[in-house]
Image 1 (tube, rainbow over the protein chains, first blue to last red):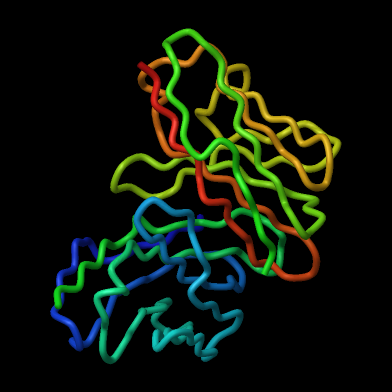
Image 2: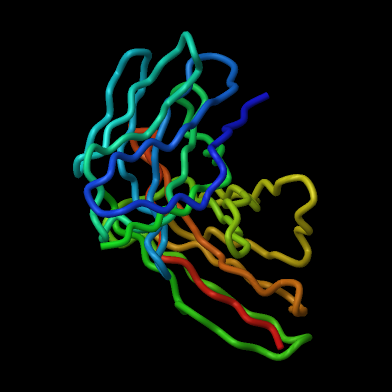
Length: 113
Length: 115
């Protein structure tokens, strides 16, 4: 089946620290992979995506590389800010179908000044 | 990306009443809309997929008679929680999908509290 596994949170960092949130997936076919971010009290916003193996998605200093050999899509940022505090969700859509998203459980990130 | 709105943003109701939540695509014709439920500190659970002009497809374990979904147009889908009970209290989020991209665009969510 299709599933996404994210590292358990919460993650607490000081400002300017390096961030990694691990994400691995199980899927049939060739999924597209996404990272969504949810700020307090808001809906989800797409942070970045990658549609095929070895693609790197990037946005707002965040990066994630689609690794087919390790079925991973880890989220990284070199220097986090207080404003990055949010919940981060890894997700996949199987193939190119306009189908359902499979979400990980989400990882709460808190950044202290 | 597409802009999605939800109304109301929050609602408090008495047990046994019905509540309707609207999801609108403001600048995109959405052939497919999704309804999710999110419990505190947990991931999103897909409830149903609705396609314009046809019946919604519900996920296993979701009561279709309790969570009525209507996708009457390409810009509007509604979720009605019938005979709401406290255990229905949750954050309900819709998303839209359409066009050639497989990206989904999410509404801001509706916080339902049933007393």
